[in-house]
Length: 261
Image (cartoon, rainbow, N blue to C red; front, side, top):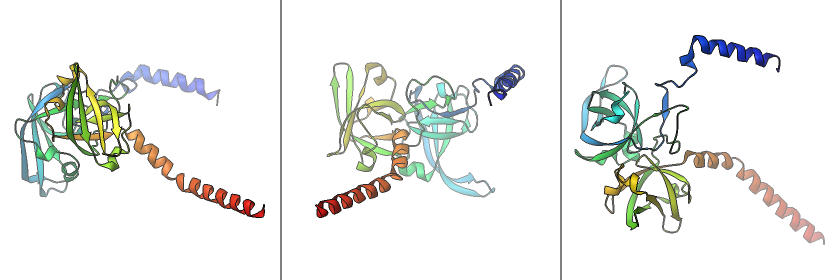
């Protein structure tokens, strides 16, 4: 194996010389988000359409969202991913000042995007380049559910916000952990598992760059928990039954030994 490795390196080096673009950051290879909002866009329209062309040429009904934007349209292309207030959506049409995306039924069930109105502001971010700098955390744009703002207060130039959330989602939210709120990468401050709420804080700079500070008490926010927590739970779930079985067996053996004494 050690003899083969130098030859592999030589071949790789030669390939890079002839096709350098294949081994550097591909500008079209964008799959994830960072939670660093690039701009606030404006909803132009949200409408139900009955002329959506499906894969087999037939037509069906669907929901289409049109957003006025600027920054995220730089480098855009048909089919590119744009994070809209935390939701990864596919651009189906675009020009120099706006773009359109379709909202699937699952998106409407999981998020508040179906409640948007003309003139509403939304957080926007282009998908990040693989291997590029990430100043936030890995955000998929797959919203887990919505939370409700129940309290807001200032701490000098910082803004604290308390969010009520379903207990099934709260179990993935931990103090000082990552969370994406309306597509913004933020750090959890406090968690209350009795009353099902958590808090987060916005520094002065961030307050001016995202839509969250303008939301009133009772306003909704899209939430995406850190996916690593869900993977960890899934991995541990297969081991727990065996651990519990072993613990039960140990108790039985201890009881048997105690009885003999």
